[in-house]
Length: 161
Image (cartoon, rainbow, N blue to C red; front, side, top):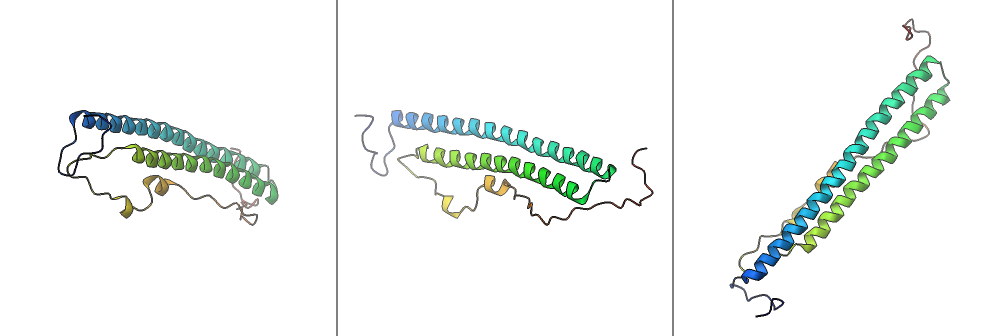
């Protein structure tokens, strides 16, 4: 009997060699997916840390501008630059989530279901957005009319103590 023969009729078990081949393929595909997910998740964690770092940098820049009593336009520019940088990083994060979804869909097509006996029911049609799509964060609006809070310069608080 050839290993590339058609699947057995319903009710018959698949040959042992075919079953081992299918299981090894499925194991290999699942392992590749797990490695790819780990890689993408580590890159996402690194990018999320970059966002936190950029937010801190913005805070320092903004406080320095307040101390120098900078103009409203300078503060607005500082805010816009920070938001632009953060949105760029967030776009990269969302791209990594999309890549994870694509790899998962690709792997699902390469997984070989059992040919004999009962097959698990497909729940793919009833699912909503993937967990990766749910984790994606929306972009922050950077409209030109963004309000910038400028602290009062008549305050008696001295920041240089």
